[in-house]
Length: 499
Ligand SMILES: *Cc1c(COP(=O)(O)O)cnc(C)c1O
Image (cartoon, rainbow, N blue to C red):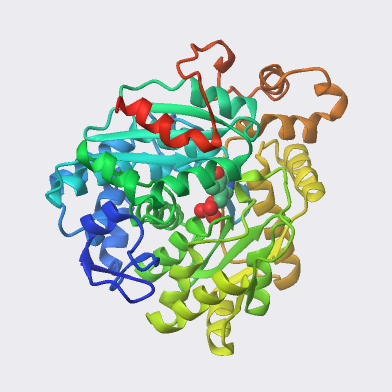
C-alpha cells in the first residue's frame, strides 16, 4: 500500500518511509491511498480472537512491507501484561443499558496515549531498518503532560533510537513531573525548561527547523524524528480498539441486525476520533461519531458551522489534554471526505496558516454532519458529571472521560437516538486525581493535602487501587535533574548526546 501527502505535493511512498518521515515534505500528513475493508467473515472470526490477534490483522492490512513475524513482534511487544494491567488491553464495560465505556488507560502511564506510543517505537525501529537507514534516530518531544511520559515508556531501550523529552518547569502537574524525572532506560533523557509549554515547544520546533543543527548531528550519524500524533504509526494502532469494541459488542449479542454504533470521543488533536472514522471505513457499522470538546470548542463550532476559527482565547481547563486550538489530524478527515482533493485541502490549510481560519463548502459540511455530531462541556459540568456518575453508578471517571459522558447526555436529549454506544475513556481517574477528588469529595476534604496524599485519600474513600505507574511516585529515585533555559535547548541536546 502507498501513502501520499494530504497536500498532494509529495510523491507516493511506502509505509516504512511514511512512518520514518512523520510529516510530508510539503507540510501535509501522510494518508493511505485506500482503506482496506474487513470482510463479514473476518469480523465473525475476530470474535474469538485476542486483542493482539485483532491488532495484528489490522496492522498487517495497512503495512504490506512488514512480515507476519515483524507485525507479531510489534503487537506482542506493545500489548502484554508487563506493560498493561488488564489482559483484555482495552476492556469494555456497561455503564447503562446499551451504553458502554471502553477503558483505554490500562497501559504503563495510565492514559490512552499508551495505546499508540507502545506501538509507534516498534514500528519506527523496523521502518528505519527497512528503508536502509544506518543513522541513529533521535526523537525530540516537547510535552504539556501525558505525551512525554507515554513516549518515554514507549521508546525506552528500543534499539537504534534515543529520546529527549522537554517539559515546562511550571506547566505540568506534580504527578506528571515525577513520572518523567523518575524515568528508567538507557536511551532516555529528560530536561525541564524554564518557562511554559509554548517556550518548550518553540525551542523544539526551532531545533527541528535548523539546517545547521541537523548537519552537526548528521556528521555524528544521528537523524531527528518526531513522535507527535500526526505520525501514521501513531494513528494506525488506534483504529484497532474501535474495531475491537464493535467485535466485543457483537460477540456479546449487544448489536441487533442492521444497527450502527455511536462512538463518543473526548477530542483534542482529532487523532483518536479520526481512528474511529478509519474503523468505519474498514467496515465497522457506525451510526454517529460524537466529538466531545471542552471550553476550547473549535471543533464543535467547525462541525456545526463549517467554519474553523482558531482566533479565539485559549482556555485552561481541568481536561488539559484537550486544550488545543489547532487540531492537526482534521486535515486527514478533510482529505478523505473530499475524496482525496489535495488542492482544496491545501487551500484551507493555507487559509488557516495565513488568516487563522477557513470555511469549507456546503457539500463537504453536509458529508461531515452525516457522520459527526459535536457539542462541548464546561469545567463546572465536567465536575458535576464526575460526581453524578460516581453517585449513580459507583464508577469513577477522569475529567476527559467526563466531558465525553456529558456531551453524550446532550446528544441523547437532542436526538433521542438509542443506538448502542461506546464512550471511550482516555485516562485513569488517578491521573487527574485532584480534580476527581474535588468533584466527589468536595474542596474541604483535599485542602492542605499534596497531590500524592490526595491520591491515597481518593483510593481509600473509593476502594479503587491506585494504578502501578502512579503509586509511590513521590518516593521513586529522581534520575533526571537537568534544568535548561529555553534558549539553551540546542546545547542541552548536544550535552545529552555527548557531542
Ligand atoms: C491526548 C488526550 C486526549 C485527546 O486526544 P486527541 O487524539 O488529541 O483528540 C483526550 N484525553 C486524554 C486523557 C488525552 O491524553
